[in-house]
Each structure stands twice: as structure tokens, then as C-alpha cells.
Length: 171
Image 1 (cartoon, rainbow, N blue to C red):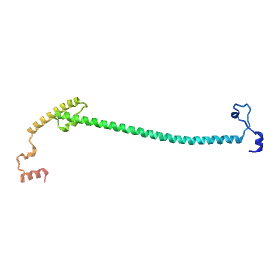
Image 2 (image 1 turned 180 degrees about the horizontal axis):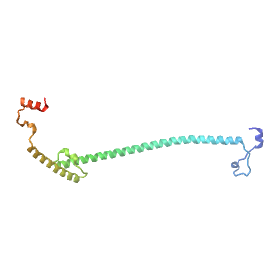
Image 3 (image 1 turned 90 degrees about the vertical axis):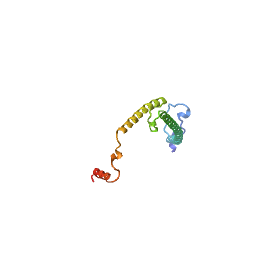
Image 4 (image 1 turned 45 degrees about the horizontal axis):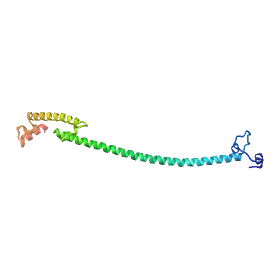
């Protein structure tokens, strides 16, 4: 600071220092202004550093919370999956039991529809009636129609078989 500046304003009094506002306008003091700027900049740098630290803590806290939430969600999903599998197994055993009572083949047990024993029993009765009708009509059909693989009275060895194969194949 130069001597001329010191003589002009030897002891500047700021309104903050006196505790009140002054109606007099103070002359500009560059050194004092630079000191305030440096002080404000250092405070800002300290606050920025503290903000970065707090942001890191916030990120770590969120990651821990997400990990905890993820673990909870994972356990919830595993529990729901286990419950679903248990219900499916229980329903499968119920289907098999109802199918046996209705004297249905084991292959048809999976085709039964319904979620309760009453629904499954009603479906099993309907399916048993259909399979009984199909089996009865199949037996009648087999009696009426001769089996074409029975040879139709021709010899199974020798020339007649060979001749009929050659004729059929066009050889």
C-alpha cells in the first residue's frame, strides 16, 4: 500500500464494525476489498470441499440403503417363488389324487382344470365320461375293421410277397 493511500484513509471504519449503518460514504480501499475477496474465496473453497465430502457420504449411504433394499427385495422374491412352487406342488398332488379316484390314466391328471378339489372332481368326471366313450367306440371300431397287417390270407414268405411288393413299387 502506498503512503498516499494510507494518509487518505488511515483507519477505515466499516458499518459492520461500528454496529450500525453510516450515512457517510467510505472511500474505496482496494487492499481491504482484496482481503474480503480472499477471505470469501477461502470460505467458498472450504465449503466446496465439505460439500464434496458430504456428497460422498450421501452416495455411500444411498448405496448401503439400496443394498439393504435389494437384499430385502431379493428375499421377498425368493419367498414368493417358494410359495408359488409349494402351491403348484400341492395342486399337482391334488390333481393326481382326484384322477386316481376318477380312475383316469396318470397322463390325463395334468389335463384336469380347476383350483379346488370340487372343480377338479367335476372336471375329472367329465373327462372320465369322455374317455369311457372314446374307449368304447374304439373297441367297436376295431371289431368291425380288419387289421390290414394280417396278410389277407397270403403267404408271408416266398414269391407271392415278393411279387406284390415289386408290383406296388413298380420294379
